[in-house]
Length: 288
Image 1 (cartoon, rainbow, N blue to C red):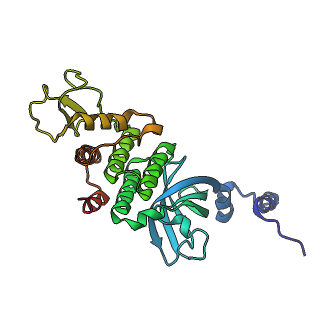
Image 2: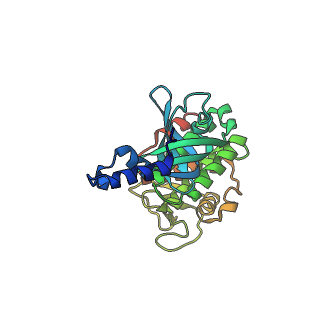
Image 3: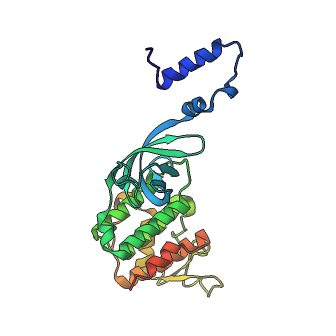
């Protein structure tokens, strides 16, 4: 018995038979299963699962912050089956190696292997809720089909410190908020007073609607929200926005100053997005 050719060879053989036929078929009339095989492209990447949704009894629809393609949505068949290799690797907050087939309109995860699952987050509900807030920020800010390594690196480092408990939770919140906004093109002007260009003052005032600061001499009250910044908090905000990534987490503030820092970066997120993320509201219920 003649063995049937497979894959690309099978498609070529089908084409030869079609070409030799007297009916003279054109590409538009080829069987759809042949066209579908031709348009699929396999992509290997790494990414963090920032959303997951059950589809049917055993499939998952996941949203992935990838290293090199921005945020993508992909189906993972049989991923809810505990015996399937994709089960652990497509869970929320898992950083994984992914083999993805890219079609014209959708992505399909063919294979997945977990790299880091951040087990420490499951021991602290406040840390877990903050991690979910980070995921929502990525979903709202990172575009599709873009080099997203900077975003991924930021969130992975923040999740690492959050999981290990080696940085204050409030510090990680503001670092991730302000740095992600800055990377997305919403970097505030924290260099000097918007009016007189003063670099320092006893108190600076941050205006989140415009992303600017005013010194105490230029600030005469405002008809818009503001946060009064002591020198140490302003220095921390400048550090987060402007420093090289390798030094991003290398600073500290007392608890009272961290609360002011949170107020400034939170308000900037809300005014930039024009909404209060639900995960932020949930996370704040666990703060002292």
